[in-house]
Image 1: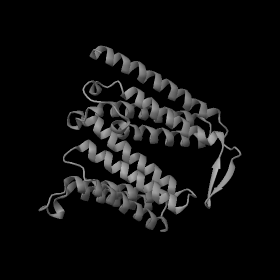
Image 2: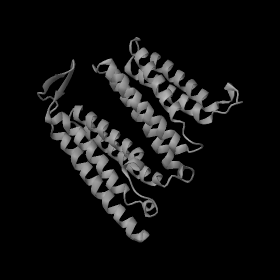
Image 3: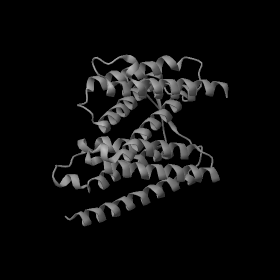
Image 4: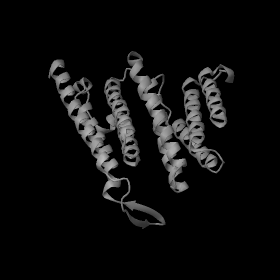
Length: 275
């Protein structure tokens, strides 16, 4: 298949995926804000199931499967065998972003603001899908803009998740698992894009475990959900950045980026407390 045919196939599939996602998000406008849900007790954990509650998950699965369908047209697979494992890092963020956007739209009041949120989120998702497609080539240096987009969206998604968990009634054990998995993915995605050296998976697990433990500790402090999310996200970025720039004989004050991130996080926390 020629490059022209490949590009045409990519554009066709990308357009179809965006059309189906737009239709799915638009249907959320018709779903009632309040619906009866059946409660199921599983090992002491209460789960509530209803058709409308599953709709965001269905949309997220559509985004994940559709992204795989679109990404399989990439020219990289002419010389390599395509597989779900290779594409999984590129599929996770569109899946999570779609899930969060669908949940937010489903719980928002139906008004003009709803359509503004829908349009903004939909454009972000489209940019994210394009960025992940380009980064399949594993050449982050020549695609700096798309690298920045994916990394920033990763941390933005983690921030939204942390705020939502702090503001929810989800059991602490489940919250710790969700924060651990989210921190692990964000750290892995950032390190894989930067590609400065071979990834140390033990370090990634250690960072995720540290952030999860801090999340549990901070949950019981009298801070609002936004401050909670900012602290965890700022620390996650700082620690991940420190791992990326780590050198054996380097002094602590030479790590400009992580120190700057900690400073910015503190400033934002102070400002959010005052205002």
